[in-house]
Image 1 (cartoon, rainbow, N blue to C red):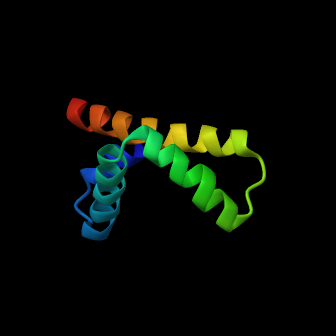
Image 2 (cartoon, one colour):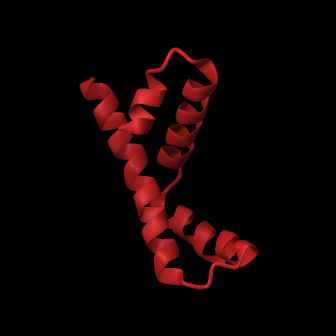
Amino acid sequence: TLAALSRQSAFLPLRGLATLYIEIVRGMPLLVLILVFFYVIADAVGWQDRISVGVFVLSLFSGAYIAEIVRAGI
């Protein structure tokens, strides 16, 4: 809901960040997103628990799609 409201905002930097998040995540296949986070970003940051990485990526991906659904409903 926050991302959908940010995308509708009149404040341009907030709208730009929300649009960037939604378009990048929705434009990337889920498997690619999981592999990038699982092998590249988690290793670079030192994230040891791989299950939490998977949960984070799935919530990021679902959040982008749900933000567009909520924005269309508004």
